[in-house]
Length: 386
Image (cartoon, rainbow, N blue to C red; front, side, top):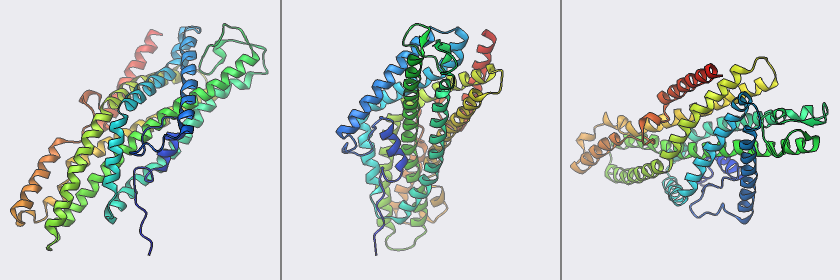
């Protein structure tokens, strides 16, 4: 009989591995850094060169179009670029800690416990399918949106900066058809890598959160089963779970160190991103292809933010409800050491798995509505100033 395949950080979410490679993020997915081959390093360097050229051209483009066009067309792009640069810079700075965290996850997943394997796979699997749809829709809508100016290349021979979907600048206007086509192609690659890098960071972050939440869900179920099992192995199994719990708590502390900055950045970025997306939709006076693509991207962005908030909320709740199932079991009838350790686990619930350093810039379900309301208020302010 074939033994079941051992699960680890990589094979529990293949999409994370693929997008991490395609985006050029090359965030740690193994503890030994085996994902950093020479080819992947060279590819990552190329993606960053394209990205930096693209961002520089976008910044210059802001000053070569009207204020209204800059506010409507350029702002979302710049906000996303800032989020990507800040979050990835922080994660690269925390690379050694991320490797330790991945190693810790692999250690927690290395056991032969069928309940653990089933809990992790059944929890992470459906989310991976949703993320596949989100990735395809988001990348597709952005690339299509940026490529729409190619439809007018045969309508005139000279072009200006406002002919781009997202204004960029490599030379003074007017410029030739060849320069325009080359600029749009660069913009397609630049915006494609920008959104892929953001999606890759989001998927990687979500995967870290999901695997830890699955551990808490597993321990909650396992603890209830152990304390309802009146056999001589109760003490052995309980002590084994207690050691597992200690490793999970250590992983939780590491995860907070890695993600507390990112959570703050995503919260603030989301306010401005949805503000400027709302501004784009509000100032689009006719129903056209651009409006439909912006709407499609906006819906995808809202779903993506909701997923992050939802699963951070689930991690928070899973960490505080660890002993709920076992509390109604006859734990008080066991020997003193088991009762004492069970009380320690109850007190550990009070630590709470809150990732943000400040509650005002958290990413939970209440924070989701707070972000939407702040974005709406800021958008109204820009519309009044317009």
